[in-house]
Length: 350
Image 1 (tube, one colour):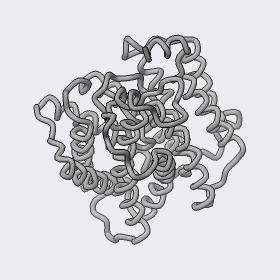
Image 2: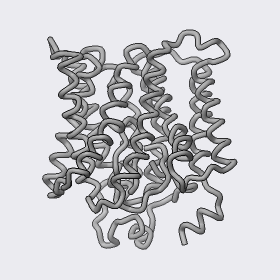
Image 3: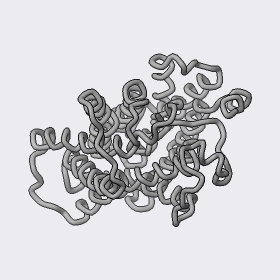
Image 4: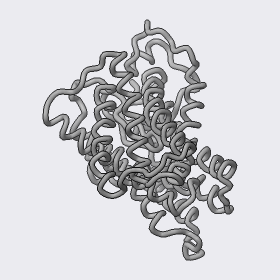
């Protein structure tokens, strides 16, 4: 089973043999420069005779990068009008509606079995309900640029956890070096040499905890839902649906009901859910099937760049030199933790 870390969302993407967790979840060392041949497409699970989508994969890749990069800006705008739990509930609700329509059109059946639904409930909490809520609360006190960069630490947490929880993920010098480099980048972003001055510790901790939830969810799903025989869409839709129910129970208790519905904030939440949580998942799913997880997962490395640019240009958030420098170091470390020796990569491809 392959997982995608879609920036702010991580979902099950296919039913193939599970690769290593990565940022959105699966990062071989090199990516093709162009769409693969029929044979390569067959290897990724797409029949050679399948009709190509109307839009070139590069256009959809760019669109996906923008959607997920702007998600942190939309969270910030949403929390200006609604409580964080309300933003998360709306996000999940709109996203679930989009996937429900997709399931109806494709006639994707709901998964069967109490055990499967139990696993989906746990996955929905760690991959959707908890991180979405934590990011929403974090952005009450930290800029969206910092939240986007914190999200990029997910593959670092994933690499550290997988070495402990997954026996097939053995540490190598390269991966350990990448882990150390990545967390050095985090300290650079946070301005550790200044004593973290100017940062809200609680908000930053929430954003980092949100990024930690993703790999915890990846590992759980990898251990429990791999090889269940269900289609990707049959797992993605119900997972978001369960997360929506979880927030439907929590939101009235801790946030109540909105007293008003500011238009801008409401549109931000709707876009965050319908585009950033629903449509984006379907686009990512199509990319994985068409060009493989190696290329599709590279969207993860554009998210913090776009999130930073959007926060500065649209919201007028301040940006010191250590933020982009630290972000670059984080991304370099994340890429290094997911890289593999060439000989090994070639051996796995044959």
